[in-house]
Length: 424
Image 1 (cartoon, rainbow, N blue to C red):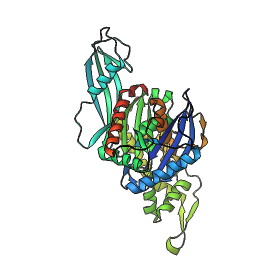
Image 2: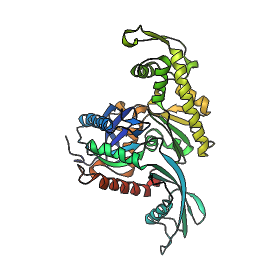
Image 3: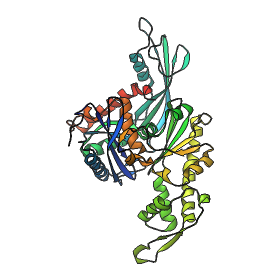
């Protein structure tokens, strides 16, 4: 395999470890910022529940399979990966900080911003929680609010209002250990809705105000972006796997049969079905085949999708931005592939709805990742594109203990927080 960064391009790898699938994407970033997809790998995931690792060995095997496929397609030897994290253990809170500017000319520098963000981190957290992201909402300089980037301005007093996103320490460590046992380094840990928003939303949507709803296998992730800043994030512990379970139980069939029905014949809005065809499912253990009406299947699916969308509506109201979302809602993730889901979302949420697929890719395997199921994976490499990180900056193999390496990752997370306001 080729050595990474043998040319002027940087190599980045995104690893989306989901409840139903693990997806690995190898991409190159040229000096002009263009993103090319070099390799894609995907493997079934059986080691997670609602976004959290519950079986180390199964997760490790899925990671290895997905990355091996991506390596084979790209001809690149993967050394380190940018990992997405989700789960119903994710929490969001607001914090404020204030500092004085003591430079001789009163000009605000990057170091001043770093000091301020460090001050915002001085909050009481439960011992089992750690900071994953810290996203500035606005800066206030000498009473003047609404400032997105204060560097270069003059002032005496600077304040910041930030959103702090936390997760379980054990969940982060278990995800980290799975990647390490698979033979790779963790370059960065990124909240999945943050990554997905980079992949599927355009600048106009992020400016006008938009809700991103990423319906995965184990969790549904919600991100609200307004004026180019992530204002709110939430994780709902109901997603595509629950839909599959409902079909399995409601129709008394096997899980793989339920999954196949959902993917091949699923519809999220029963009233939109024009022809009520009959679907034949093989019987269990020699029993006669079952005949299922498509409308009955749709009614089962619709009930669960309605529940998810209603909870999304609650999250939108909780955010306080329900009246500032001119661009409506963008649905992505595997669950968004259901026919009729956009009209249903429009009816339940009372706003325009569309399906979002990865965008901003300039070359390589563009068609292969042109699906909502790859939104998080593509977003993970785009996050590296924005932050300037590359897998080449990581060691080829772990050279110290797990705990020592974990500390390195936490330092990297802290460094990223300081420059977060630049990315949106």
